[in-house]
Amino acid sequence: DGGITQSPKYLFRKEGQNVTLSCEQNLNHDAMYWYRQDPGQGLRLIYYSQIVNDFQKGDIAEGYSVSREKKESFPLTVTSAQKNPTAFYLCASRGTGDNQPQHFGDGTRLSIL
Amino acid sequence: AQSVAQPEDQVNVAEGNPLTVKCTYSVSGNPYLFWYVQYPNRGLQFLLKYITGDNLVKGSYGFEAEFNKSQTSFHLKKPSALVSDSALYFCAVRTYSGAGSYQLTFGKGTKLSVIP
Image (cartoon, rainbow over the protein chains, first blue to last red):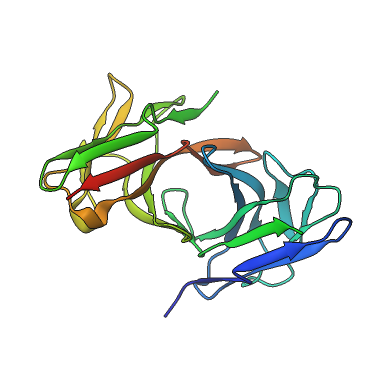
């Protein structure tokens, strides 16, 4: 089945540690996105990539970094500079055309130890 | 600013009754509007979209939405609610983010509870 796989489902970070969240899709989509979800705040865009080897900052990029070396993969690193990383992180992808919906993975919940 | 608003944090409805989850938008030009549903500890699932054409859009699981340009609204509806419809619902609008690219801006979500 085609879809988006996020791993791990749960992740714990120690103070001063960088952690990387994985996002893989087999939908052959060019565009990929990372969102952060906090209770009562909806989804906020962290980074997005329209094509391989290119990505752009979203609304809350500070403390995060991404790479897009392969079409199917868009990993997100939460750096030690992100002082409040506890949240639910969602990855999404979209097919060609702005009228296409985004498809979401099942998320990674990150907590601080 | 381009945005969507979901004025109700929570909606309660009895099983079998019609349900409405409200969404209003603020964008320049013609809006592209979407509804998503999220179950606990899961990602968002696409329900339906309005791009152009008929103001009444039909989607998955018996949901529909009515686009109203004069009221800048895109309310989600279902004629008869099921307990399994209980979830978090998000409205989203396509917004321009510069350099020829568009993103989705999401509302804060409405928690729907269907009471048996």
